[in-house]
Length: 174
Image (cartoon, rainbow, N blue to C red):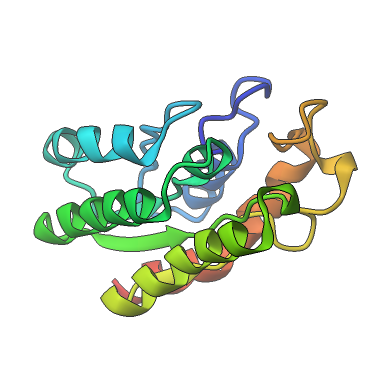
């Protein structure tokens, strides 16, 4: 969702975030290391190198939905996200964890356990937390590409708004 799959260049919410920060003369620079289709295992395998190369003050962790859509075990997703969070903490980066949800066709038990992963990790590590990236529009097809999974260009400002509600608090506290 953060890699901007299917969107015009520089139209994704991460690009909009960068523009917002630059317009406010922020000292923050956005570096997007997202890969479309990435899983938590892929993120876990890449996080240490990305942290060492970039040395970020804040890391936005928005991963897991591809695992859930593949029906991977909840413990596997949880453990990979935990490892990513712990790597960020070891590297002294503040973390904003962004939660995702699955469509109901994955079953009530699996979708609830998936959703609970994010809240559990956020509470355990006392993280800044966005409960659902698509809050306020996730059930509206007009905000999604024809695949009904990836948000379209119209949705990007809404995503930024959901992230910004929490991120601006992090920035002001750093």
